Image 1 (cartoon, rainbow, N blue to C red):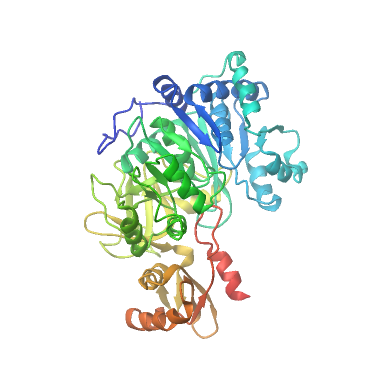
Image 2: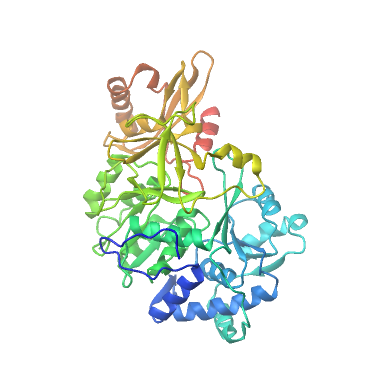
Length: 518
């Protein structure tokens, strides 16, 4: 039986207590065989057809040695990702989710650590693997087009899959890589039991009906947020998933209107800000939209207000990380407070501890590092006992995130521990400055970093995307003088056309530091 039992609420509906993701997949196929599972461009695949393609590919993977081994998925968002993921599960392999945007130098140490027996790529990402032939070695290679003829070929082979291995709750179900608190890629392995718990927890935060929902995910499927909201939870709820070929904001708006999207898996603030700025957004029919989940980076309240004014829907933030997701969330049934990441998931423990004394729990409304524990938290990093010892202490994962918890238990994320700016010995939190700057109506996006300073140790630099920069700068200076302590005020205000973002659509502060240094 699953370790985390959560009662449905809102529009949430009861689900069987799945022990494995393969049971969950089989149930979706049985209950909704003719429902479109995946739509991408002009291709549509029902749950029945997806099941047949998965079986056909699983037989190929099992014959190639997937059972008991890691299988690398170097795939962009698409039908092929979902196909390859579930086929690997049924073949008894561990799907290893790799960033398809990584160049060879970044991918190399991950492949060395994961040691995949099979690698699945597109022709484009396969070129990256070609450059790593010394690392890839004898790994079996599959080039996946996910075109109609190839899909038909897998469907045709579904009856010849043979005997596939037995899957148990303790069978590994995903290996993901994260920079964590140090920036070094580390492997996090999750079992079927852990991920079925995570899926239940996601549905507790953002409950979905078990029929009729249409999801549009834009977060990368190799990333924990995009993986849960774009791959696993849609199957849990028998949703239709509309997959953009790439994140082009105006195209996403068109898809949301055309397919009557009910759940938009937006992710970080940059995604929502980009849609709001599209010329076709105001006239788009988004009346079917019901839930707008968010995560990956702190949300300015101003942006939440702008989205609600435009759509009538409140962005519901949640909090998670590769090591355990989700951790907390805003929910309609149990409380929603804009600018926060809500209450801890039932069964999960969240505490705020002193930045220096990791055992000292901070009182309500005092900032500190967030530590977490729960039934689907990782037990350690793959092949990295030293990193595990730094991150896990006394049964808690130390997240590297800085936040506060109010008297009602609602959690707010303020910053990353590594992003805190030290000015003349004072801690300066970028979120405090970003929230203030965002209140200017001309500001579309903002990012704050610290740069070395001979006198103060560090100085504050703010990058701003704004309408009418020539009119906005003086207003920002006044805003900071009135709303910030002297040590918090930016010494450098720069206006830019866009802010750099990471492949996970988060603000890329490393790139901002490089720009500032240049």
